[in-house]
Image 1 (tube, helix red, strand yellow):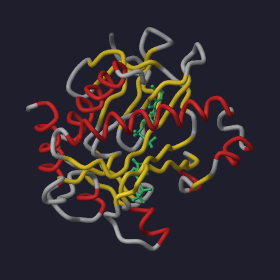
Image 2 (cartoon, rainbow, N blue to C red):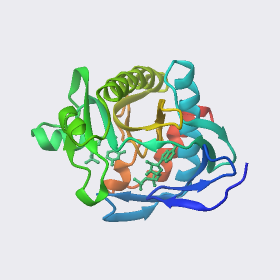
Image 3 (spheres, rainbow, N blue to C red):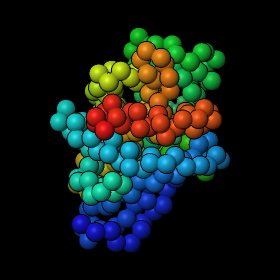
Length: 236
Ligand code: ADP
Ligand code: UDP
């Protein structure tokens, strides 16, 4: 499978056409952005780590009943995935307060919830990805009721799997963002990525941040944190 024309360049990945109209190749970059692109930088080695970590987790998720876009890893940075039309919702699941939740509701970070929360934002960079509820998503025709229900079911299933998987490698899963897409035959599948760019991951003992907050908050050691997660995850 080879790359044809570039279809899209995003903040963290490029997307290429292939000879098969139902497949695209995603290519992970080391570019890091935060605050809707206002802060820009590089996390050396991030692209390869996020690619391998996403694929590893998506393989396991497929085994546990969550359909994904993953097809085949081509190289350190490149992966063949099913081409989907992305549902323009960012789906955020939280187990522990942090980030915008702590800010919006005026609470400290680190409060462990009795049950996970879910929220949606409208995936629209020009509008700054505004929060919306299910009725807003329906009114805007971003998805159908059936699709939203399926997306919620899959998102909580991802949380159940990922939370216990991370616990097994000494990491507390604080929160994460998912994207879903529709394949050419109309199926809803998990798309995009699952990586330290899109999850908050805290060491269970030291509570050290092992994710993109090291870059967002200028804490230093982002490269080392991504490598540490990868080492625990894959043993390399
Ligand atoms: P952004 O667009 O937010 O800057 P990225 O740099 O990660 O994000 O770009 C990857 C783009 O590819 C995103 O817009 C994402 O929604 C999209 N995408 C992810 N998986 C697929 C897929 N299987 N088919 C088509 N597009 C996808
Ligand atoms: N997240 C993401 N992309 C976004 C917004 C959020 O991957 O565009 C992830 C983020 O890494 C965190 C979770 O979603 O793991 C919740 O993020 P939050 O709403 O707290 O946003 P923040 O303002 O802190 O980025």
